[in-house]
Image (cartoon, rainbow, N blue to C red; front, side, top):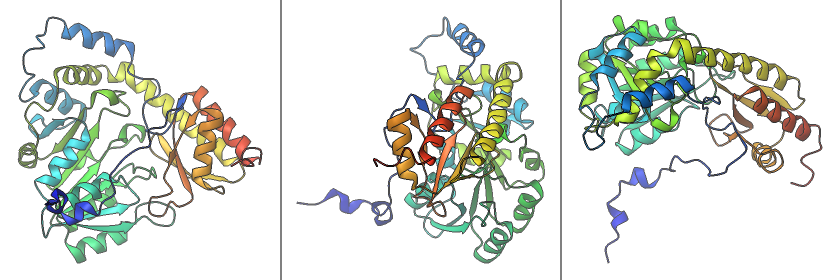
Length: 364
């Protein structure tokens, strides 16, 4: 009998699926979410606008009203915006229209695993430049790789997941000037950094910027993301986006979130940044831990105890769920923690102090 798996691309068979352990904890610090959730004003206004809308009718084929709001929010052009079912859909769409056999994608690792996975599934060759020894972007090595390998697409996450490093504007412009390909900057966490590369869109038609509503916007459950690019590039990427990709509820909530960002969401972002700095300082005072400074709403932490043991004990004894990233390149001895509420961060710190004081690992 024929084996249907024989028809699967060999490069796909060799991939490890992007996945997440299904563990649950009372304190969830493993997915970089906004711990305060969507503000009540955003929820109320979204529901008000949905009153009377027919669920039997399709949403807008092109969510033009959302594109216009996103353009104003980002300081860009509405015809250079594409909204998607999470930024992951737009990552996939961008690679679908650019990558195939013989095409090269350059990334800097460790980073978001989906870039490599999607590019490989599409038949592209993935080239990787390691971060430097401080877990920051090695711009010189990236430039050399671009000049030598001439990648069709370069993807950088900034701030980078999972390390939190951020590429400087002049460094990015240097890379944009030497490449003949497209440069994609994934800004899923830009609100926590206080910086964006969006102003460079005006000067560089080969730049594309991804953003999401899953982090600072506190709408992870609704799956909304968007792409900013030159109109001609955005038009080509949109060809790989499925019709009616954004449902009515998500589109409406995204419009409200953008409109109320300054009044309702920016204060939450500022609280998360303040907690990030407090958490970084407190982690430095625990012997055996060395946090890495981050521009996002999470940070990686070097651990003198094997990260899987730390993960297990935090979950079993303290109900705190973190992310074990020790399987990533360069991060063998690291775990990642999202920034939670002050109470959640205190519980994390309590657990880590107990573990690293030598009280918690005896029974593992």
